[in-house]
Image (tube, rainbow, N blue to C red; front, side, top):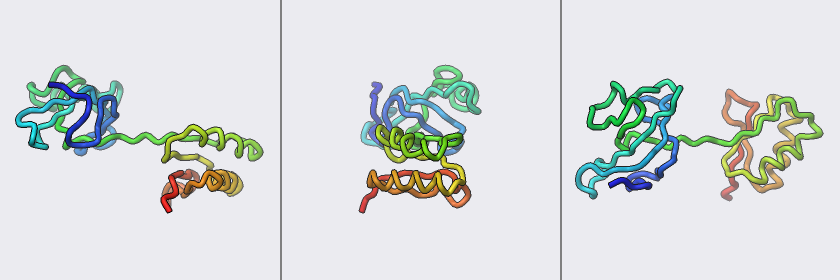
Amino acid sequence: MQRSKSRVKELITGDLVTHVLYGKEWVGIIVGFLDEGPEDSLHNEKALVQIQPSTKYDGFFKSRVSSKNKINENLGFVSTNWLFKLDIMKTLDLHGTRHKEVDEKVRQFLNFITLPCQIITGNSPKMKEITKKVVEEYGWLCKEKDSFNHGTLVITQNYS
């Protein structure tokens, strides 16, 4: 019987997922869940997944899975143990924004956002300074995305 929530992982119908073996280029949407075998086993749960069209693995179920797990070329069953939820972070891109408009634009973005999110400032120290000031007023944390990308700030909750 199909369900809308996984027993094994924090996955629900409608989640975008990626496959542990194929990486983030393998993108599918969960359509439902099915138990194959005893319900008390965590290894028997499968997700019915629709591969997203025009992605690298479009047609994945055509030749890469057994016929019992294939419904059509882009729809089939995958063990939930192989799936991970694809987190898509909301992004505000400030390229082309004048410094005098940054404060208001950042506030409008942050007012209705779910954290974490990211703001692309580019490498302008003034743009970063204005953005960080607003984020701090909200009581949130702001840090550079990574050591290679100094022009993107990731905003997270302050857990202190």
